[in-house]
Image 1 (tube, helix red, strand yellow):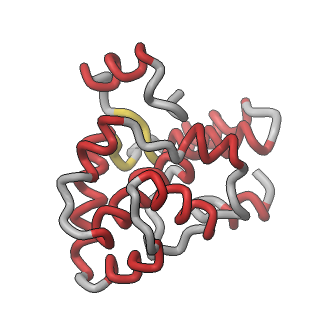
Image 2 (cartoon, rainbow, N blue to C red):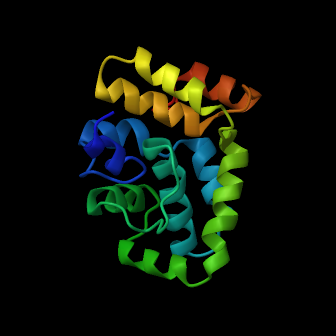
Length: 164
């Protein structure tokens, strides 16, 4: 992995394309069910941004509202939120973003990876391209704990885009 790729890991390095938005930032029925438990547009939008961002980056952002304008607009339109700038209110209660991140980890079956550094380096050395190395790094940071009935059902219907 190049120094530039390592520096960009866990952050947006430009805006995703329309195809990438449709593949990774699309909110399906299961996503909407989780999001709709939140009260108020700022919390619904902030939760949705964290949910989609961790799928894209493999990490939660320190400021979950620090996303490209195109991502913010795309997610807000799906939630029928007319003023995406309301997401600024998501940061009003500091604990909210952390509580939501824990809920997302549980719902998505994510956990911090505890693999050894040598296993990580060995896996990276097998990847020939920087993008393959980045994908390997993402797998070492967050990976599914197990296959749950929800993900099997959702994946088989093709509705869980962006999951591999």
